[in-house]
Structure formats: C-alpha cells, structure tokens
Image (cartoon, rainbow, N blue to C red; front, top):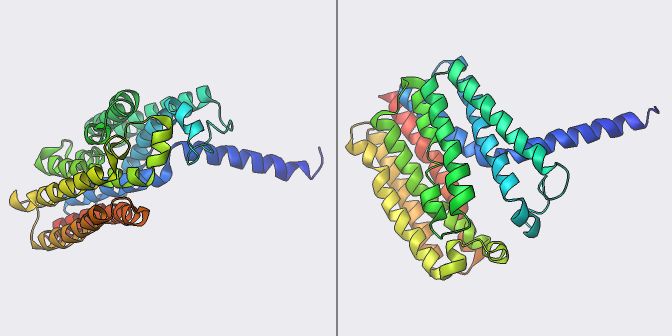
Length: 300
C-alpha cells in the first residue's frame, strides 16, 4: 500500500460517514431539537439537568433522523427525478437503498432505547409516535395522495415539544398540548411557502402539493389564513395561565411580523422572493416564539 492511497481511503470513509449523516437531514432536525429543548426549559421553569438534556437531544435526533432516512428510502424514486434532491445519498448511488433503510430502522430503535432508559419511557413513546406519524401517515400515505398532506402530516413535526415536556414531567399535560398546537398550526404556512418555491419540482414528479393543484394565489390565501389562526393559537398559553406578559408581548410582535410577511406573499404570490422571505421568517418566528416561552417560564 502506498502512502498516497491512505488519504484517499480516509477521504472515502469520511464521505461515506457524511452521507449517512445527510440521510438524517441535520438541518431540518435542528429546529425540532430547539423546540424540544425549549419545551424542557419551560416545563422545568429553568435549566434541566445536563444529563437529561444530553440523552433527550441524542434520542430525539436519532428518532427524527431515523424517520428522515426511511423517508428518503421510500422517496428515492422521486428524489432521483428532482434536481434539488438528485444528489442525495440514495439516488446518487453513494448509499444503497437497503442499507439506508436498515440504517434508518437501527437508529430509530436506538432512539427508543436511549430515551427509554436514559430519560423515561413516556418520552420514548412520544418520540416513537412522531416517527410513526411521519413515516406511516405522511410519507407512505398522505404525501402523494392529497393537498392536505402537510396539514394532517404536520402532526409529526409538532411532537418534539411534547417529547421535551415529557422528559421533565413524565407526561404531556396542558403545556405540552399547547406547544403541540402551536407547531401544528405553524406547519402549513411554513411548508406551503416552501412549496411555492419548489412548485416545479413537485409538479414534475406528480406530488399534489397545494401550489401544484390549486395555484400560488390560493396557496398564499391559505398561508395567510393559517398564519392568522396560528397567531390566535400562540396566545393560548397566556389564556391558560401558563405564560405571562413577556411571552404575550413577544407572541404579539412576532405574530404581527409573520402576518405582514404572509400579506406580502398574498400580494405577490408568484414571486419567489416573497415566498422565500415568508419561509425564512417562519423558521425564525417559531424559534423566537419558543425562546420567549422558555424565558417567560424561567422568570416566573
């Protein structure tokens, strides 16, 4: 073996490991983990123990990552067609489909064991619920059959705050349910703004996203409608006595900002820049809203 072959082998191994990480979609998971952690802080009314945070974050990542890997295994046919996704590990041939499926199942099982033994079993149960909703409800059934795929399937992305709450309390309670509702109503305006950006890709592979079936204008109307409902839902923690004035003011300011962004999209429904701004702000909105919830709870 020559000395020149060693760096090449190391690079190949590094590339393979990087592709297995890509199967988990770490950028997507990051926002889910933020909502999980901030829900823990809210339930604790302060910073939880470092060990509990560590195992919850690891288990939560593996659960969501396993769901994403299984999703890419199932969607490998349409991923190979869309330019945006054609370079993913499976359609590019860098990771075999069977290997990706086994990997997804293994890390999903690992998440159950880590959360069950490292945190508590209700936390493991809620994380598994989120995984099953994403894989069975959204990926295998709704995504390719209905324009309401995001509305119903969005329940999967709303589970992480319940995971965080259960990690502290061992149950969900009213607080966890309200956080679930916030993320659930946030999901349609967030993903439909993205769907406007990716309309051509979805149209090419026959996925019935709302902009493909009913057009950008109707999608923009729905984004505004769901945003207005979301702003109302975001105030429920105050009405329930779970959050106070710090969160109330923050939720109002963030809600007005989000609504203004949705109005701009309605005025320019076919412009990619308007959809991109709404999509980008939606992510910032959710993160800041949960920060406000956690800060308010810590100050109480």
